[in-house]
Length: 94
Image 1 (cartoon, helix red, strand yellow):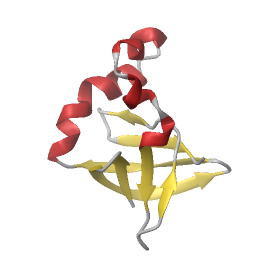
Image 2 (cartoon, rainbow, N blue to C red):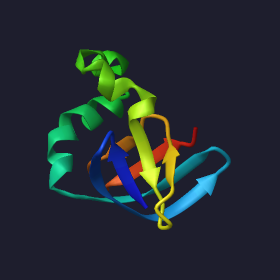
Image 3 (spheres, rainbow, N blue to C red):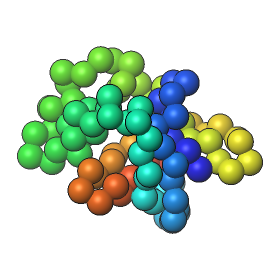
Image 4 (cartoon, rainbow, N blue to C red):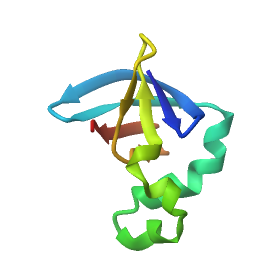
C-alpha cells in the first residue's frame, strides 16, 4: 500500500492491521514526506489540538488523502496520523 496526498506518493505502508473502519501500519517515507513533517507533527499533537489550524485547507480536506493498494486500487481515507518517532500511521477508511 502507498499513502497519497493529491497526486504525491508520500511513502509505502507495511504491516497493515484493520480494526473496523480503522487501519494501522508502518510507513516507509520517501523524500516527498519531508515537506509534510511539520503538518503531521501538528496532526498528532495531543497537547495542542488547534495546531493544525495554521495549515492550508487543502491539507485538511479528507478528499485529498487516499491509499493505493497493491492492486492499484485507490481508496479514500480520512486525514492520516503519522507518528514520527516510530513511523506508525493510522487512518480511517471513507
